[in-house]
Image 1 (cartoon, helix red, strand yellow):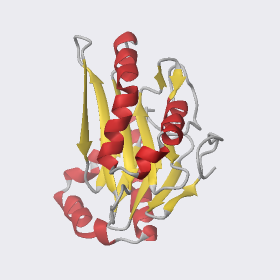
Image 2: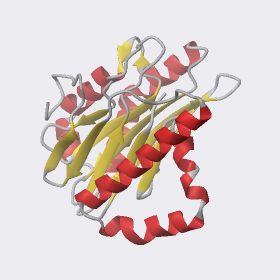
Image 3: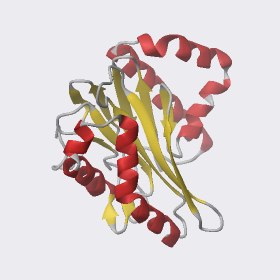
Length: 231
């Protein structure tokens, strides 16, 4: 039960997430974006939010703090693969053991070593009908919709004019323009959800800007983890 919108320009990335969590953790102020303490790198999460009886925020924070040297010397794709090495088995085991848990997605957003532009990678785990869990790590594009709530934004991009407008402009936008566009699409998704009579995402929205110099909250989470940088 999530909607995450990630927008990448040539000089920064912006991540917006809702605060809804259901299942064992019921919350409207759930933190889903986790910035690094002193690097322009962040992790965002959607899907299964308890991994081997541990909250995903604990795992994300642990990973960022325990692997600072590797993160400092790696590209974003390498950081994503390092996360898979550290926690992939736990995620596989969790998805196999929880009947109604089908996927877990971890976004890695920001600037790796020698990067002058931000990159977005995703480590994604999906359980098939036979309980086999498959995972992959992929480089993503300039505008990414994640979580169950993305289907509402997908409606917007059924119009080719909207796709072309995004392609023509996103890499050139400044922070204010990018934020305004993401807010527009988030609002579009909210309206579509209401029209559908569904309740897939919602709660308190939080938003992070990621620059090469570091991360900054535009909208801080309501109940931020005290262990994560920038709180």
